[in-house]
Amino acid sequence: MSDPSTRRTADRPGGSSASSRADEELPPQDPAERARAICLRLLTGTPRTRKQLAEALHKREIPDEVAEEVLSRFEDVGLIDDAAFAGAWVESRHHGRGLARRALARELRTKGVDSALIDEAVARLDSDQEEQTARELVARKLRSTRGLDRDRRLRRLAGMLARKGYPEGMALRVVRRALEEEGEGTEGLDGLEDGLS
Image (cartoon, rainbow, N blue to C red; front, side):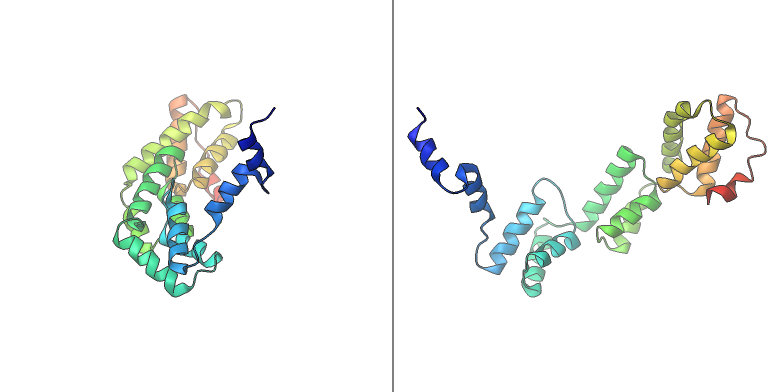
């Protein structure tokens, strides 16, 4: 026989888990309270930019002036910090995915980060660090291209770097060097630059 308290909860429309979720979803009636609750929920677990939060508030029909006031207050107390977000994003995505400055800047633009903050964040990656990461990416992928002719190897490896935002000149230089170190000749590959752009 089932526990009566469980049965009572289950008899309610939606059951216990659905009703507790519904209670969490029920927004306070005051738009400012609703906006604060939405922002806090969205900021739990993952940082967000001011623009991302503003878009979320707009979708939930929070009046613009209320959203602006709440977002400004969140910035004042440090809950929203686009500069810190951009810095952490660059650090994480460069080391985790091997993305170059150009790709990182593109991603930050889509998140609504201000251009000056983007420039500041990506400037923390210097050319030497970026090139070292490109070398590591090529070294990891090099083995999987063995057996292909040298032109296809160069195109495949340089294309991989290009998709991650590395400049064409750097990509070709890094790939050529890796192929040469492996003993693969790279003479006659100068004309491939046109095929990569």
